[in-house]
Image 1 (tube, rainbow, N blue to C red):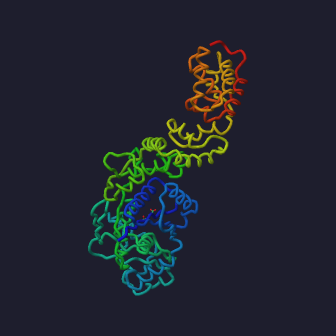
Image 2 (image 1 turned 45 degrees about the horizontal axis):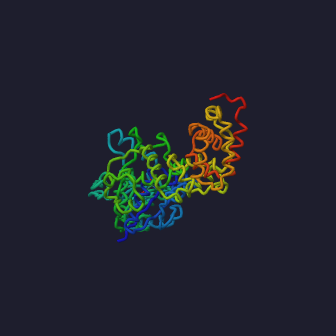
Image 3 (image 1 turned 45 degrees about the vertical axis):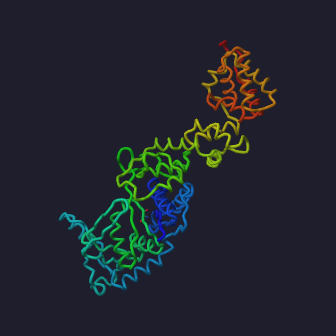
Length: 473
Ligand code: GLU
């Protein structure tokens, strides 16, 4: 049988780290076996679901490169189908109308709590033939007739065997008074209709699983396999949340992370392959199996993610990094047509950038004029013989015919030698002149990327900045 997995987020917020890991595991599990992956938007909670969240989920998935074969399905478009299943369960007496008022249910629950019992429905309406007297006007809910005896055994692919006694499960509401279906019903109908064979999700859903299995059986459908993945914790041991910093996938994109780095980081949350840390997508596909996922919670470590990001910036083909850099140029309003090819900039900056955002910010000088000089860099470097140095460099660079790193290197070292200055006394004022600050890639590379025209114009601009009465060194 072909493996079919799904990712079924509720669009009530952004796509977060935990959701993205579930999506990745489900995607890998399908793809590695030539199976199919379904995306389903569980938007039945119409008060909390928003179009922006749907957008953020789709954008996050696309950015991560987690492509789906079917969907996105929207549960709000499937209400007729849910109604049909509910009606069938009613007709077959596998579900029943419940007329109990909210007050009665509240009282019931309070009494159970007071006696130290687990709150549960007592089944009062289980065997009614019609509305009880006085309840004719009540819009009844529909409850699933859960088996009262026996066990539901889940052979969970992560947790192992988990058994639930039916006597612990009460008759769950599957349709509200207004006829709308509830979560456990919609998930079950969808997993059945969509032919999902393996459900991978957070272990906060483990307690729903025996109920879902019972409903599936009542529908005459063979339940899928389940794999419940443990939570992700922050470094303080609490469930990962905004308090721990960015938890939204798109925030990581905006902060300059590569999708490869985030995926690599996510796959290691709960899964390992020897002591390998860096995995290409193909390696993940070759080695991943949901059966090897650890049942213990994992801890989110932002430094490690940053480290991985640097690894990927350094090792991915520059053309690939360029595509992402281009996106950041757009965000920062840098026009890529106004300077060197992006691939060259990536090569020049990748050793010194931790994120694409840092890279884009450092690259700005190659595409547009900087507004102000860094004051500290100016104080430190535009003094002594700086003016003379820059004038000489301007003259020599004007005569250069082959504008490449080798020639430019020779010009700078030659100037230092003939002026009897240390290389830094020439290269640093030049660097401040062309970049506005004291940090840039090696000076010959910086000049190469800037090109002759920009370099000469910036040196001229800098000469005009140097105080006339510059002190002797
Ligand atoms: N929509 C549910 C959630 O976002 C997931 C349901 C499932 O995976 O079965 O928590």
